[in-house]
Image (cartoon, rainbow, N blue to C red; front, side, top):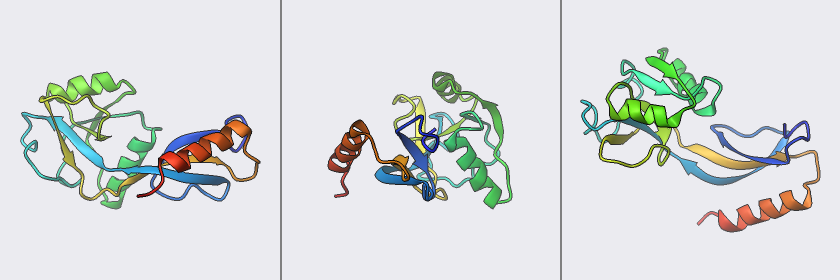
Length: 159
């Protein structure tokens, strides 16, 4: 939509460069966490790898989401497949499955509501994901888009 001119800017998750058609600004980077019931055998681990959790039933976002496609790409590098039992865009449903120990999930920190029923364990073999503001490199940004870019640069400047 940005390339087509119907969207001025977007906030996206990326594990690589945005591409030559886009200008971008990094807002932050996020780690991925294996989210599991506090009663699960892996709940007390300090960190886990994708190989450690390959057989654990997972509830993931839809296959066309960045996060799920990224998980599939990471597993492909290991010549393995995740044990996905359901894809849904209903985060509340995924949260209930994790709390009830019916499935685990992979999310950024803060996606699932904090509570004592869920353990969030860092995934050690997944790189941090860059969250970026992107816009069309081949169009002059509108006044509003320029203000958004300037605000992002001011508020999210690297420390």
